[in-house]
Structure formats: C-alpha cells, structure tokens
Amino acid sequence: MAQLERITQIETPDSAPRFELRVRRHGSADTEFEIWQMPAVATPRLTSALRVAGLRGRNLELVEHRVLKKLSQSGIKLGRNADARKRGYTLNEELALTLGLLFRTLAPMRSRNNMRAVAEGIEAMGCEEAAYWLGMAMHRKHPRRVLMALRFLLTDPRR
Image (cartoon, rainbow, N blue to C red; front, top):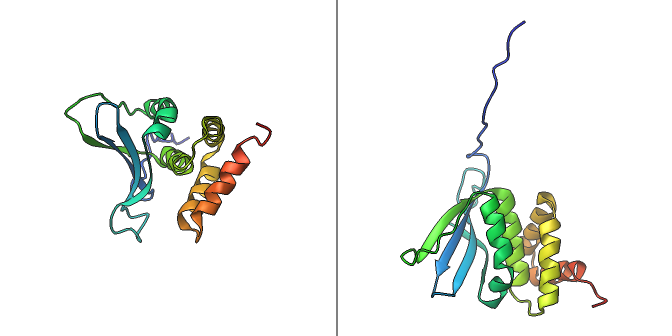
C-alpha cells in the first residue's frame, strides 16, 4: 500500500480577501479601531484599501473588552506603547467580518442595553450570517435601513 503524505498546513493567501485592523491612539484614553479591506487577487475590483467600518469614543469603550478578547483569541495582542500612535494588524476573514459588522452596527447607537444586546447577537452569528449582513450594509442603496433592521432583530422590544 502506498503511504499518503500528510499536508501540515494549507495556506491560501492569494485566494482569500485580506483585511487589516488599524489602531490609532489619539490620546491616552482615546483609541480608534478601523477595519480595512486590502487589495488582493481575490478582490480584483479593489485598487486601493477600502474602509469597512470603524469605532471610536464612548461606543468603543462599551464593547472594547469584547473586541480585545476576540483579538487575543486570534493571536493579536495590542500593546499600550505610547510610541505606537498608529498600528496595523492583519486579520482573518471571519474576525474581520464580525468586527466590521459590530462596528458599523454600533456606531450610531446610544442605548447601552440595546448596544449590549446587539453585540451579543453579532458575536453569536456564524461567519456566513455576518458576511450576509455586512455585505448588505456595504453594497445596498440604503445601508442604514439594513443596519436598522439588524438592530431591530437583535434587540428585545419588551425592554
């Protein structure tokens, strides 16, 4: 019998979209997170980086612990170095979709309870569902209507 050779790791860098997390520190307690889609072979329509979503200020502070937990689970450790005013980190597609949808959905919200419910709902989504909602929010004629529908579905109307 012929022995099969094991493949230890299969990488598909050319056939997958590339995403980047850009962290910018504006001050000691003022941080901004942005998700950018980078040009790649998988996305020939992109000639330059495309901003997917971003979050800063009070809304980021309310979910920052969730974002940092997801980043550390994927192996990204954000340092508190004062010299690093702006840094970029490569993200996998699943994490970029989830964070991009989270940032876009939470940006205009004000209610803490609704923000918590929406963040929990987005974290519970699968990669395909997050990709569907983010694609709808990015490529539809009226993206704010799509995001409002998602917020409506993820919040409890009885509160």
